[in-house]
Length: 88
Image 1 (cartoon, rainbow, N blue to C red):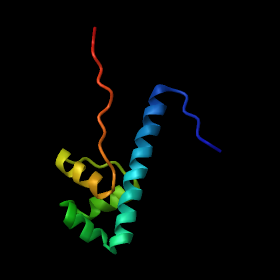
Image 2: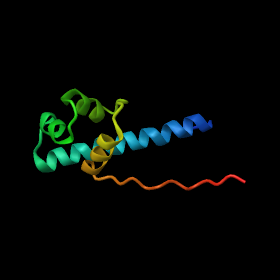
Image 3: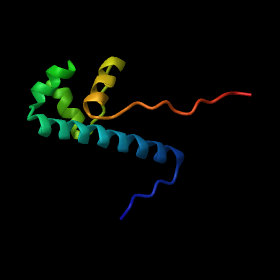
C-alpha cells in the first residue's frame, strides 16, 4: 500500500527519502558493475569505509560539498538547479 504524506513536512521528508534511496542504489550498482568493496569505494571517494556503509544503508551523513558532488557523480546522479525564486 502506498504511503500517504499529509503535511508539507511529510512531503519534504518523502522527497529526501527518495534521494537517499537513489544515492544508495546508485552506489550499489557501481559497486557491482566495477566489482568494488566498500573500502575501495571509500578510498576513491575520499570517505571513510563506515561512511560508505551508512550511505548504502540510507542513513544520514554530513559531507562537505565537494565530497557530496563526487558521491553523486559516482552514483550516476546529476545536480540540477532548482527553480529560482524572485521576491517582489
